[in-house]
Amino acid sequence: MALRITVIGAGPGGYTAAFEAARRGAEVTLVEVRELGGTCLNRGCIPTKALKSSADALEAVKRAAEFGIAGAGAPAADMPAVLARKAKVVETLQSGLAKACAQRKVKLVEGRARLVSASLVQVASPGGVQELASDRVILATGSSVLRLPSLPCDGKYVLTSDEALALDRVPARLLVVGGGVVGCELAFVFRAFGSQVTVVEGLDRLLPVPSIDQDMSKLLLREAKKRGIKTELCRTVAGVRIEEGRVVADLVPSPFVPEDRLPASAKKPLSLEADCVFSTVGRVPNTEGLGLAEAGVAVDARGWIAVNESLETSLPGVYAIGDVLGPSRIMLAHMAEAEARCAVAACFGEAAEPEYAVCPSGIFTSPEIGCVGLTEEQAKAKGCDCVCPQILFRELGKAHAMGELAGVFKLVADRATGRLLGAHIAGAHATDLIAEAALALHKGCTVQDLAATIHAHPTLAEGMLEAALKF
Image (cartoon, rainbow, N blue to C red; front, side, top):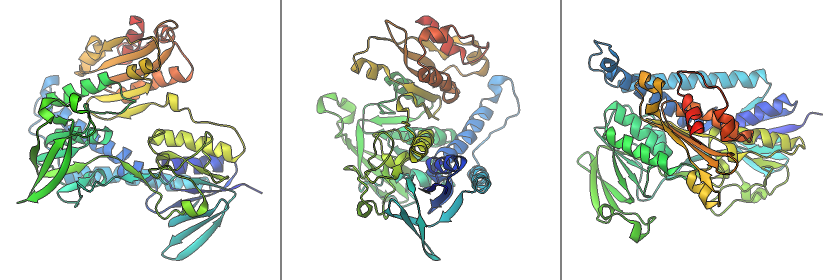
């Protein structure tokens, strides 16, 4: 008899688990309460990249004369058309997922799931409650936007990042609260569309994420200033109020930065006016109503599901993957997919652990940022004697031909052995270029291996070669 596996949540982690389990011969049921594709396809990765592509196209047309192209006129963002294109992209991919489920004989069930035990899942829908008997259960319910009491979202003046992706106008003045990945991506997109943008960040740099090298943050801050994006670092929003059709945000010194590290400019209260505010301050787990406590599935202090090395929860036979595991792991769609394959292997009794140390990340700002492995700061904190060779994009012929001079390749390597510890790229197509370094880390390559690899000319990928040669 085939192994019965129920997967709760049809985002990248969930549908990858379902497809992998079906490929192995399991009888698979995939449960989803909203749309196929989860946050990534509907309110995250894909919609933001669709908007980014429209923003890039607009900027390219505005720069047409730079490339000898005349008659470009005065282009502007047609937001209804931008949103229609985004919706078409999402719809096409949703349709593809539905067909993939049918082809793989994955049973789709719509409704809100509740875990009763390791062998039983109940699904409530308008038609009633359905019971799914299972041999294994994989939880892939993801996360949702965090809502701050000091920043109540009304969907008109103060928007979550989800709501920002459906905004049918370009605010003249936009305040982005949160200078993390989502906040920075939206800031650059709406600046390209024509908004005057200010980003408020509670820490002392943009992208204040441990996995992001500080040199990448510094470069992004410079590029933000070049584009007219204002930043208020080391500040938080104490509250907002609506006055005569505009938003007034009260900024105070950040409680997350020690007093002696607060710059003088951040120590004074400040009020900013905007036509719209985006709240991009974090995520919370989608576990409400899932029945975790009653079923015996342990969570941490913040509600994220706790798992062991094989992604099994405290309830034997029940596994969890993706965003619902929280920031102690890696909250990225492709990491959820990797975790899905490991969890399915565990369901079949095989030993498999996700390779978090070699998971790349891509940030779709302008310029893009791609990272994998240790930052310089992390390597030094581990006691590594590291060397960090760098090469600027402006040293590459292809970058000049493209008109994309802003950027840098930075490698982190062990001084004695040359073993690659990390790679960080900011610049055009950085999110694609980082794949070479991810493979090198996965295979345990040295910087000498990179330097010995012939790279095509003229390409941006030569930056990896040139940085390696500097070692």
